[in-house]
Amino acid sequence: MKGSLLYEGKAKKVYHVTDEAEKLILSYKNDATAFNGKKKDEFEGKGRLNNLITSRIFEYLQQQQLPSHFIKALNDTEQLVAKTTIIPLEVVVRNIAAGSITRRLGIVEKSAFNPPLVELFYKKDELDDPILNDQHALYLTNVNDKELEFIKQKALQVNEHLKDLFNQAGLDLVDFKLEFGRLEDGTIVLADEISPDTCRLWDKETGEKMDKDVFRESLGDLITVYENILQRLEENTCAK
Ligand code: TMP
Ligand code: ASP
Image (tube, rainbow, N blue to C red; front, side, top):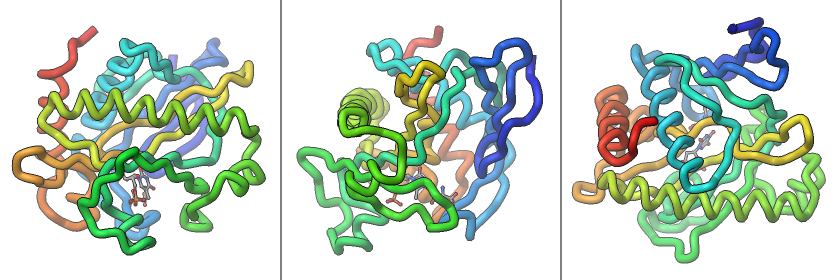
């Protein structure tokens, strides 16, 4: 049963589970924020879409032997997950240049990265999530060398599986952000969410942006786009 509120973030609320200290409930909100909360809005149905999309994706990854904190979807907007302590790193994998890397390094949008790039950002709103090198990450978090390597390898494995999944759905996976958490016993697992809020997805045929850039750049109706993503995933994954 849903217990007390543990934490409220920009896109989700996190609740305790009564009598099950090792589990949490994530409740997806309708809020959308961009540019570290400087742009804000609310979209009826967004919480449901991100919950259902993330659930599909984590189920798919589990079928590919890639474990995460995900246990199951509970209803339209909530999911049950294993309790982890989130490592304050945003692990970004890039297949195609877009977003901050084009501004930071002057790389032309749509340039391909072969092999894909892995970037680390410090998850700290007060600092605007600055980019880190490995030594910064080792200094600022409690992960060791081997664990950081593990995290980067996992992120690249997730990339291979997600590229396949989205490819079948007619989408190019441009880039995405992952977060990892530590279970009670210290094991590091994939956590947080994987949704069009945390991925860049471009339609393979039209090149149309089908992710949170629609909101960031005011390109159209976010809900129609996210519904289309869920529908494509439903056609390309089997429900449990
Ligand atoms: P960036 O190009 O802005 O660095 O974003 C890279 C990817 O990470 C993109 O798919 C969006 C995602 N992302 C998040 O999920 N959360 C964030 O706070 C930011 C800045 C990016
Ligand atoms: N997630 C960040 C925010 O909420 C930035 C972004 O996704 O663009 O502001």
